[in-house]
Amino acid sequence: MEATSHWKHPPPSWLTTTSFFEKSGKEIWTPHASATRRKFNDCHISATTGQRDIAFCPYGDYWRQMRKICILELLSAKNVRSFRSIREDEVFHLIESIKSSLGLPINLTKKIFSLTNDITFRAAFGKRYEDKDELIPLIKESIELLGGFDVCDLFPSIKGLQFLSGMRSKLVRLHRKMDQILENIINEHEENLGSSKGRYGEVGEENLVNVLLRLKQRGGLQFPITNNNIKAIIQEIFSAGTETSSSTVEWAMSEMVRNQRVMEKTQDELRQALRGSKRICETDLQELRYLKLVIKETLRLHPPAPLLLPRECREQAEIDGYLIPIKTKVIVNAWAMGRDPEYWDDAEKFSPERFDNSPVDFIGNDFQYIPFGAGRRICPGMSFGLANVELPLAQLLYHFNWKLPSGTKPEDLDMTETFGATARRISNLHLIATPYFT
Image (cartoon, rainbow, N blue to C red; front, side, top):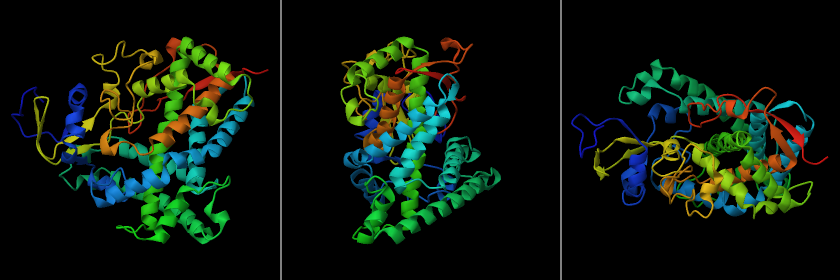
């Protein structure tokens, strides 16, 4: 693509934007908000949720209805707070499991991933299910397939490629297995919905499946909710909310173990504020400023989704001197934007202090820093995801001192990222914990 007002050749199918987008983000997400829409390969969508969820759904009345339900009924601030006891209970079990392995290398990647899945399972279904060990690997494999390379993305107009590549058949197989597991869980909830035991979870909160079933039974919606809608929304919550939160905690620990100054400063803040408490509650974390700066800086260098979900131009637009033709698919590179030296001093350096007394935040108003997206498509589960990051990270740093296994220097820790829908560590993070309290 040339830096002129038009292309001399047919418009490309995909346009990846970095600093170009930073300079003109408001032009895409504000004045031209109606001129873009989410766009995905149809073979991927039809093989998974069939556009019944929020991420894959095009703009329209159905999307507005389901997003409203998600924001007001499922993942509102009140509902996120109602799951506090679940988070505190699961993080307590995490800390206890680490205490049983003191002095030994711990696979923190697996432990944190299991934690976020357990929290999400209990929030969604009200309790633990034996099906978790079958459902989570299916969701994880589906995310990896959707986030990986497929020739259909390069030649979307050639319909037969979806069958030659094998992507569609793999997604159909995975979706059928997930669909059956979720159908069984929903049916069980429907049978028990009449009783308070069936409506509420183990600790008294109304779980997400029952919220959706209640809306289904109440009716009165422009688009009636079916079990297929419920399965699509729950599947999306797992897909978007588990690996993203766990990888953020993991990256924060990775960055801090390479930067002892930051780790010690975060631990000092925690330990001075909590003054020897044996068990931490979420309400104890509200005034921990430096911990929040650490999370912000982690999200800058390691956004949950390095490439935001694609958009398609519905109208021709000129942005920063470029003519964006109709039907051009635009991908926003949030990872590159967070590391652009034009907007960040020492862009590759992990320095939480850069956000101290800075107005820049991740709520979508600062277009050089959009780890959760921006505009009306900003992630509706942001509060839920952040809650699953802050408490685990605080407890890990409060209860333990951390070091790399013998023979590994901090500067030698492999920080390579995977390529996909989420940018996880390519290798699991193994650390040794020693107790702060004796």
